[in-house]
Image 1: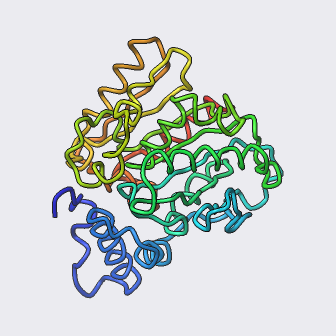
Image 2: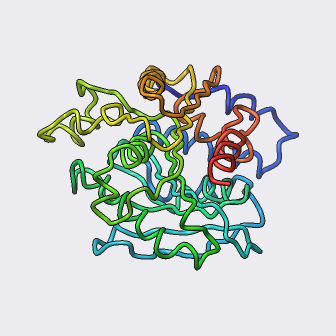
Image 3: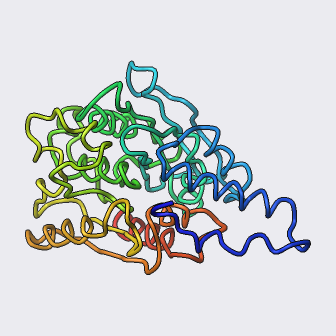
Length: 309
């Protein structure tokens, strides 16, 4: 299967010394990897990964299914260290899925991993193609951030210290809402984002040649408005861009192009490229079984603590 980071799941069927839980964990991760790559970013598959892989302890879900808009999809969860009293820095995490799939509960492993490093983590659902087209899902991101500003203090979060992060399509959304001022201005939260982290994000992908991009952005009257790279500015929030050199789904050139554009205007940006890591491998590196593959969690948490305090 194209893009499958096979090295992350190889060597897991070595006979009688394997425990049942280890085998189930390997199967869950392999199944989730395959499903994510083929766009089957569904609740049952990702919940299987969450249930069968060891997670990060000491984290609780403080909020479940809070509405940040009137559409039934516009709901979010909030995770925090169990005994925190705050105020802690906040991360709003947007999952990927080609702008056409995904569900917040499936990314509990990512939220718990980040929260265990001393953050309050907000994971929103957002409206998806084909029910909507661009810019509806970016509007949702802005609305979720506005909810976070208004409500995260009740979950020990500091509304003055918010970062956004995302993987794949979620990285595109996070970067666009961070760079294009119009979205946060429209919800009355200008300047709310203090840092941004993108994992394997598409930032500079004109002309549209993938079906998912055509479906999501093909009807946009201004195609440049869909591209995060079009909105680079000197006063952009500090950015951390992570990619793998084995990513053949969202090519690393997206990260290189955005980093160069940000540097060109004097904006703060850091880049990390992981050797041998593919498109889903960089996401799975947030889960405990695969952190040895790439230091994604260390890089993210170190950067966000440095920028948010």
